[in-house]
Length: 238
Image 1 (tube, rainbow, N blue to C red):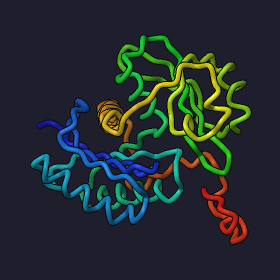
Image 2 (image 1 turned 45 degrees about the vertical axis):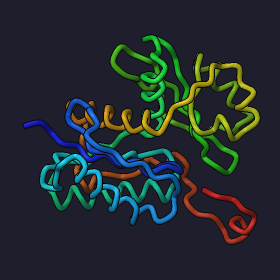
Image 3 (image 1 turned 180 degrees about the vertical axis):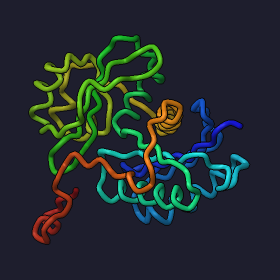
């Protein structure tokens, strides 16, 4: 019997939920813009996705979630929902790198050639960027190193060191130093990201890269997980 994967992503401003088969084919999906009441929205979305895919919770073989880096609250929502479902259904959890999703989405959407180096630059707020470079392969993307935090003014030097010819991610429209970069800027749609989430989840599942519910955890990259009252009043956001 073919595996059924329930995939969740609340790492960024747009929440994604999809049901996929073990080849990465999307059976049904739900996209929600906005980070308000993510937990409530996620539960409604996953029930809707299962219904549209003509599946029930008992059909779920594994639960995948976008582990980060991304918004702290959002990462905890997706991880917590994934853990709860996995415990209740006695099934494994599949962590998927959030920046890898963007790289895979760009690879497919723009038919990138194998060997190209693509950098993902996502807004980390607080005048910082989550950055990770990937090498495009014939079948997917491979990380060239761990995700890290980079200041907008330092991105150009980091990209040069990575040898990246192309860039993609949410930071491209936020920071002026990033807008001025000479690398080819690529865009991806929410649908592209849904397909990438399903593809990476299925790929990891087939490779046995799963964890137990107890082992599932967000990947924060930034150690700072809270703001002082003064910082909040000044408009800073994590």
